[in-house]
Length: 187
Image (cartoon, rainbow, N blue to C red):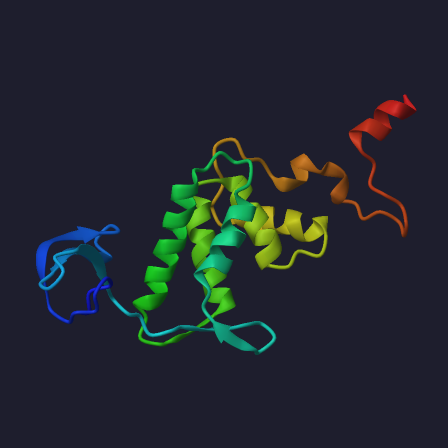
């Protein structure tokens, strides 16, 4: 490795230590010619991953894109940024461990949902609403009911219809379901 100061090709390693939670090695070096010291990092070079999108297009896996979607789903939930980055690290690690270099966007979405499920119901539902492409509140309610029926219910979670009781009856065309506020206004 060439010295960044004088370009001399020979240097010696003064110190090596694990960095980035064991994902790299940090080496402190000294140039044998100019005696300047500099730091290098040695990392595993992962083979690039390809994501197969729903529309059939393929694109390179983009960690920052995944992190942005997780951050958006977790806004105002109080989950620390480091925890969100750890979720993305875990998902990326799971993908890298696979034999195949191609992964579907659905597989990535399910991995993220599994991680969010144990952390925040709000973040889980927000992420699911985008990832599963909810078209309306009915899709949202169906997802909550499905989650409850699978046994994902928490102690304080009720049937989704309990939150939106007027959704059980489908409104007439153009008519909105009656809300608590509209019921109070009538009386």
